[in-house]
Amino acid sequence: MLKIKNNGQSTLKLKEIIKVEAVQRIQDSLAELFDIGICLKDADGVDVTRESKPSLIDTKVVGGVVEWDRKFNITHEGEVRAIVCLVKGPGCDEAELDKVVTFLSETLAATIQAGLGTVALTQEIVYRRELERKLEQRNEHDMLTNLYNRYFFEKKLTELVIEDVCPVSIVAIDANLLKLSNDIFGHAEGDCLLQIISGALVEEKKEKYYCCRCGGDEFYVIMEDTSFEEAEEYIHRVVERTATDYCTRIPPSFAYGVATRETKKDNLQDVIKRAEDIMYLNKLDMKCDGKILNTLRQCLMETGHFNFNDAVACCNRAYAFADYCGLEGGDRIIVKRLMELYPLGMLIVPSDVLRVAKSHVADVLADKYDYVGTEHRIAMMFEETAPVAHLVMEWNEHFDGTGKPAGLKGDQIALPVRLVRIATQYSKYVCRAPFGYALSKDEAVAKLREDSGKVFDPGLMDKFFEFLKNYTTDYEIDSCSEWGKIDE
Image (cartoon, rainbow, N blue to C red):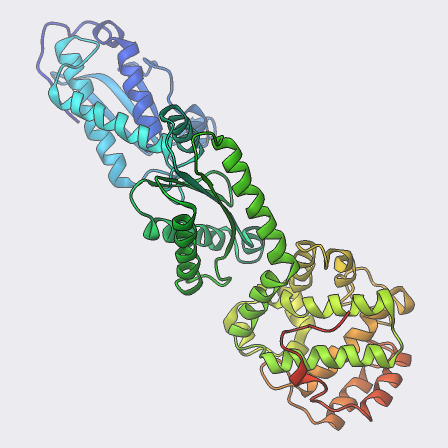
């Protein structure tokens, strides 16, 4: 509480002493900068200025009364002349709140003392300039990554057009797997992915490189006086840095496109469009050739839950059984697609749980982790797996109708799903821990028989036992260079 000297104005109301419009501007600037709700009242509790950030203040109303985070008086010769009430938003910490209290105390006390609507103190002017600088910083920068934002991006492009700068290179960037990362691991993990990519962009940039985040997973880099070759070298360095320097469950990666305004005849907007088109083609290529799916597989193997040889053996066993059952055409392709996705849904299970939990306790894990739903979301991300996404949801259905989520029974469960479930369950039994039981062939067959007619199709089960008589565990394993790869 700050006291001030009497200047003969003690009988005046606060609105008669200060210039309300000037105080309102200061109050609004502070509210915007520090994410604070502010209310200024006179000694009688009557509002002097309108509330700054009223929506924030409304969140603190309990039983019709505002629960203020801070409330303090401004006095004049022992008489209360003003009451300041503050509510702290999520973007404000206690230290910043203390600064606001100090500034408002001194500013309002000086304003009342002088009987003026503006404060001619040097300290206040300097402080206002600092406020304006910080507001400008916020206007031009992305809060999460501290890169420039779309407002700056468009302003800089306008400057380059007016100044007719040449050459100018543009890199368009689209982060991979952001939505999936948010869905599986939470938004904090997705934010971390974006921060790693933005950090690499900044670490590798040179002078006159302007790194911007213009949307959720959308980045651009404006590069003045930079050739196409230099721009390509820059983005390659960024790719290398993000591939090795990260702390997220899913390795950060992105698709990109580079284009350059090489002559003054080139339209800069056309250059941006070229960079975007190349980036979208790159994104499509990464999806079609399996790079993104391979990234997810690698993530799962890094948990120690699953290894490459077990994965390939599991896939080959399922493909061989499909051939044995005479599946052709669309059904055989469905088996391939299902095995490309299996068991990527387990990514939602924390690494420490995966390292000790065997996949044969799938029903237990399903009660706590929606790994089938996660696998469905992964399937929907890719053009080649989207058509089987609805079949993924049948993964935990049982032949006797007691499974989840729809309680499908018998032939209501798609043939490829029934077939793949038998082959993969057998793989779980014979594979090494922590993915499997490490059982012998005879022990695994005995375990499967227990669920014949209950979980698994008994007719297909008999076929599978016949199939196993002539099947070797290393079937084509050396000819398969990547998980789930077979000839169409």
